[in-house]
Image 1 (cartoon, rainbow, N blue to C red):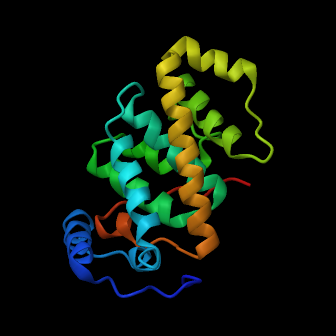
Image 2 (tube, rainbow, N blue to C red):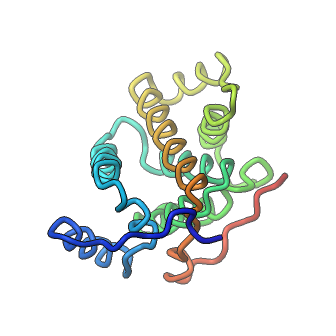
Length: 189
């Protein structure tokens, strides 16, 4: 599938900065950036919020990354799944676990805490939400209130970005393949 909105030309001073940063981070300028370029206010706000989220430190980075990937897998955002797999590799996360996110329920690589986080991510991503008091209580016991609030906010942001990408037809751009990562597991139905 190609994007439902053709990419715009990325231009101007801000465009030059964004293209340079993208090329340095990813080795190329993602096509999806051109789609989002049509509304630079939305792009700047989303990028700014994403950068601010990276400074949050109450919840373990691996748990937040796995949660985002679980949302992407559930929603069907191949771009987010590919990108987060790529970023997990760059941040030194457990790649066996990252590779298994789409089939986390059947995989034996996850700890009980990681399973609760993945369940929370999926439960927050359902319509209507399927989050239970028991699940949140387990997370509170294991992580504390500040981390659960942070995790919930990361999952909410993941839902915004994944759903927007799917709706706009933005798909994987081969980030993970470009660094030689093996394909991710297929999601169980």
